[in-house]
Image (cartoon, rainbow, N blue to C red):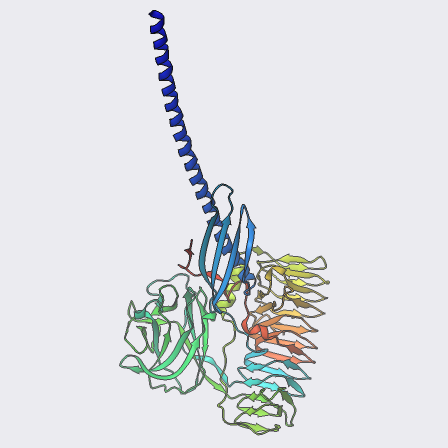
Length: 605
């Protein structure tokens, strides 16, 4: 009996143990199953995040590639980390593109992870236009000694072209604009930050879409151009400028003339921007007129004009909308910073007393256009009001041409200086000889000298505060990283390019170095008779800009484009104009880069 009870108890213990073991196995299986599901879920989350990161890397790649080459169309299955990304680019218009990027991470135990993101990229409408092989300012230009322009020439003044000069395209000499401001309310010091009494914001809402400033002229002379001390926020559209009548103390709707303030000439920092009038009416000094800056309304893309309180005696500023309601500025009595230039005179093309002093055009569509054309042989038409010693009579059907704005504003140039400053400063002079050097972005406080057959490779924007001299076979080239874009060297002193010096782009078609000087030589102090830019003996693929000074091209010089206040060509100088400069894209500064449009980022999947 005892043995039976013992065996019975033993059996019960074993049974209980088996039940407990079964329960533990079930519990363990549940934990393992739960943990496995959790780990699987977490793994999937991880690979999906990785896929999203890959897609975003594709967006970043598109931004980089577009700024290197605007024709970038995308790519497929680019490997990065433990996955790949693909990018597609579709054109909305010339300044807007839609970017779609797909990130993919393969996984052997889980479903594949795919993420798709989409964004819009825009380039500001501040693409800088160089529309003429030669564009001269108020100084016009002089061509002698068999000088040749392979392209069009435009001057805001006379084109004195004699002794067998050739212009293979069209030549236009606009009537000279006034060089003295008749009405001025100028900023006494640069504005570093805005307050309610130093700035007026407009274009940010319908009720504040436009800014208007009333004025009176002192004399009855043609109105040629207006300047504004202005900056922009975001990338607003061009401003329509109107000169209108006064209607009971507010802008009326009788339009005397209309012009365009180009957004490309306005930057994110305050600077003076010029609007050249398409026609030059004579204003009555006994009447009040209004300048209306008519912008589009956008809370993220608008303009700010510098202002002061009752700083201008002959008018006042208002805010509102053209052909609608106007109100006083806040505070009342603010005047925008502006300058109005009056005056001017008629201009001439040629100057010789025989046919053929200047030859204009190679086809029937190449014309000469000025108030007076003298001593010219033109393949197309001669539009003029007075003409002698020409191969054909004047066609008087067109009025005199009017001045065109120069391509760059002071604010544009300051942007490039700021770009250079971001890379640091070299104190004193910088000399490049046979050993060569790579430099940029950088500021040089002294002079830049490249000689002895040395090559300076520009890897970023340069700002030279002193003079620039290339001689003895010195070269300046753009780094290959510029791709099809242009690079910039800005300086404040005069420039001398002689002795076989040369320039070249990145090696890609359409890439050029732009050499821009703010020098007013030879008329400014410290010039010692030097021109703002003097070039002799060929320079290669370079564009020269000296909007405040004289560019002197001598002795067989050949380059791509030249813009200056005054231009002199002699000694067989030749200018070969490249049509690619009509839309000059830069990787930094004005001209803008491809950027994400705010609020356009979307995770599609």
